Image 1 (cartoon, rainbow, N blue to C red):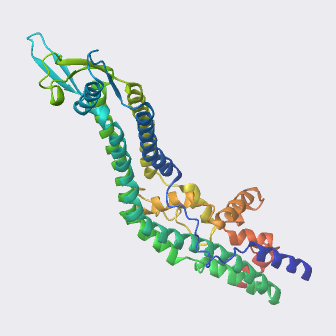
Image 2: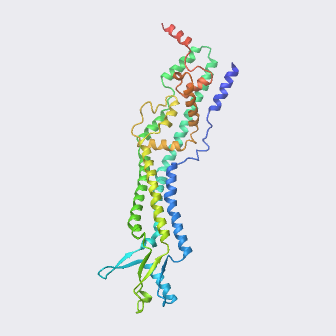
Image 3: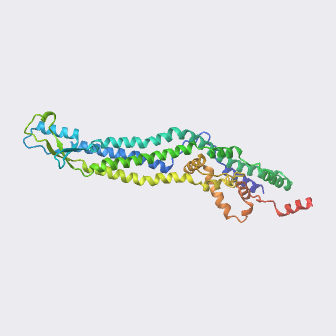
Length: 392
């Protein structure tokens, strides 16, 4: 019998989680996986396209090629290219013989507009980093620590019960004390549960998260407006008529007023415009999905921790409207599930609990570990009958 008790003690000791006060959970993920993906794409993709635009400009030289008259000198031809690129305006003659000017500046501003887009898309990340992350990290550190400690308390309780059973000669004393403790709810976790209740009434994190995604949608909409209003207007404009009677050629009488120029970088401009619109169109459903996750609770995570004694966040109907800080914290607990060691243990015990033949007697991790340690999960019938006879 002592060998069985020793084996049970070893089993319970192995079930205890290690003390991690020194590590302080340095690997916490303070961005959800989908948010991190959106950040890398919304910020990195414009920078990649900007690099493509600059690389094309440096490799092919001048982004325009003007067809200067054959009698132009080298200096005059170079001046024409430079002047037409600086003005970048298409002169059109209407039916009345008047010239209309159409600016082609989006071609010149392409790399800088991509840089501005990347900076704008990084602003929501900075907002989250400096406004929400300090509070979120402290919340996660405390809740993960308390959940693991609560699990350890349950295991130590079973160890204590095993010692009482070994030392007590009267089995009635052990079962009476255990039933009294269950009835009077000695195994509650008031600090953790009240902290979670407090977070359920707080809306700082969820407001910041909503603002972050709302800004992403706003900047994405602004990108669509920019591409549709400015890029689409010059999307197919490969050639334009440039007015050259300025500066060096102003006094030249034999020089025509307009010459034809061709945009050599039009293909890059089209690729950048189409790919930007396509990428941000794909990201919009992802951003909306991130927002919809705030409309439902992750009850799978909470139900696992219902195995802790008297931890009844679900059964006490504490969960109301999910748009609050507690729901955001639960999303990040799910993202940091590798740091929550007790979750894997409780998940295994929850699966094993469903396979036991005495499901009605096993509700918590204490009941299950008591059963595994060799103690009965409920008072034996002969002891129950004996107690009934004494009261009669």
